[in-house]
Structure formats: structure tokens, C-alpha cells
Length: 290
Image (cartoon, rainbow, N blue to C red; front, side, top):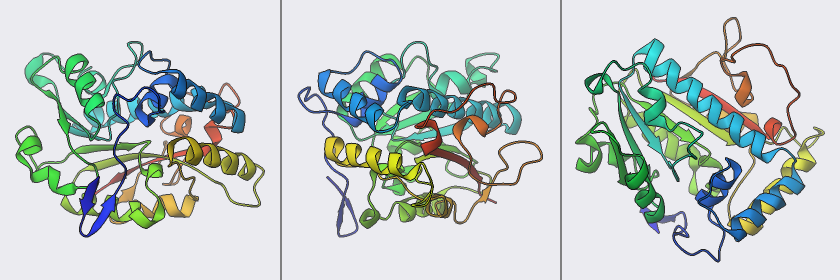
């Protein structure tokens, strides 16, 4: 458990217990990885039954992250990144954060610095073994509910806390229930981030009780809660509120700032396929701190 003031936040990670489903391993399974077991596969099957297209949703969310990272590292020129709740390394066919941000680097000295943070010892062990392939990539044990990490030697040894940082909070906030104040967690991070920083966020989305997709969101949330103990679908207004103190970027040229489906944020081109149910139950956004 992790203390936030006088409250206990979160649950102990499952870690190496292969008889219980793990959030990190379920995500790995959805992305086509091999670091998962039968209980994790069972959860994926349950989620797919509740809202079809889970694997597509996971891939589109990951592709959104990749486009954001390319934009921030290439177009904006951000040179340091913080991946909060990083989880297990992606399967070999999917680039990780440090691989995407380093695409335009002419050499090791030009690579942006990436710090991955997770509180699961298993994720840390895998991350350090598989992802740390240069001196600008680091995997750190820590809890994303604690923004004081930015000034902790385990992190600020690698990051300049006074220069703009690109932060990923992807696929994690919906695993904090309302009583744990996920909005407060984000606001605390925004407060400590230097001006010019960016925050990319993905979240499970419920379009509302009158919407045809609401029963799918409710059923999927039920599966998440029964299997993993977390996984709350929130409204557009609630998720937009996570960007308090930031300016939300427009998802494409000529569009209004706001949240969109993962494949609608700076898309590679016009849509060529229909979205699955699960894809329409995820929303994403990117904020900038003035």
C-alpha cells in the first residue's frame, strides 16, 4: 500500500502470483504479448464478451501514445519524458516510449531521456532487463500517486525538474476509484511540473446513461471490478476535469481542443474502418501547462 497523507491509496500489485490476474499482464495480453497467464487470458475473454474489440482498443491507445511522443520529441522538441504507471514492456512488435522518442536522434547524445515509473516489482524487473539499453533510459520503482518523486534522487538524477517534461498517464487513472481522488493526483503532478510541460492521458469512457454504448460500458466496468478490483468508466466531463490547470490541445488541424477517440488524435489520415465497441469506450487527450 502507498500512503497519501492519512489515506491508503491503491492496492498491492499482484507481482509474481500467477494464480491471480494482474493488470499489467492483462494489458500485455491485450497487446499480443507473452508475459501473461491463464487468469489474465480469462479476464481478457470476459472483457471481450462485455465490449467487443478489446485488442483493437489497446492497439489504438498505444498508437495514440506513439503519435504523441513523436509530436512532442520531434515537433515540440521535448527532451525528457516520464512514463507513469508504465507496466510491463510492450511486445517486441510494439515500440516502447524510449524507442519512439529516440527515432529522430542522430546519436546517443541526442536521445531524449525517458524515466519509467511503476510500483510493481515484476514490471520493474522486466523493464530493467528488457528496456534499459542506453544511459538515457531508466526504470524506477515508485508510485504515480506521489508527485514528490519528481524531486526525489531516484528521478531527478535523470530529469531536470525545471525544464519541460512530457508525461504519460495512459491506461492508469481509471484504476483509481473516486474516493482516491484521481483528479487530485493529476492536479498535484501538474502543480509540480515546470511550465511548458505536456500531459498525455487515456481513460475508459462512458458516454452516459442515455447513449447506446452505456450498457457496454457498464458491463465492461462490472467485469473489470470483479476480476481486478478496479476499472471505472467516467464521463467526458470528469475526464476533461483531469486537465485543470492545463490547456487541452486540438486533436488535429482545424479541430476544437478536447477529448477524442484514440485514432482521432493527429490521425495518419482519414478513417478507413469502423471502430469497435471497445474502441469507442476509450477517450484520450493531451494538455499543455502554460
